[in-house]
Image (cartoon, rainbow, N blue to C red; front, side, top):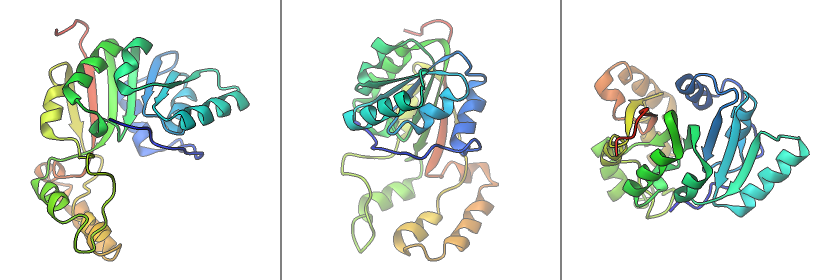
Length: 236
């Protein structure tokens, strides 16, 4: 289960790609109730609050929430409510018009139970946006299982962490209309990052950029955006 994402004191810029993609999915957030799930240092909480949202910033880390609470007090950010809570407790905090999360879904188990919690936490017609990694590519999954952490290839994260799987996206479809898009193709560049220690980044970047033109290749990307729309009536 997700344990909080640590602290950040750097605000995201106005043209942040993830933040702007979320705003495109949400539409206007002015006056809306928005949940920042796994908020960490609250950089995206401030991003959305700056655009008029009434943000509930949730994280399991008491340190992160305490720091965010102090920051909100120091800057009179009264449209952000920092809350120490587990992702499975958000239903009591809603309902929310919008939900935002960055690299949070793949930490949550049991995932099928969380899907129901998320649906019940959202207002009818609500929209959720998640920036996530992806286990769509069997090549990347095999490499992660058999190569990462061996042969001098660095390992990031713990043994229980695993990219979001296609079956989990299917679980989301039980409750939501789901749209998956790919902001970029992050595929062959992982060879540069993990195997070649940064060498060849420009070459592999050019390869990924070329492959990105093809829809089937995009689905191999290690990065994805998920836009979830809850119907105006319950599916349960």
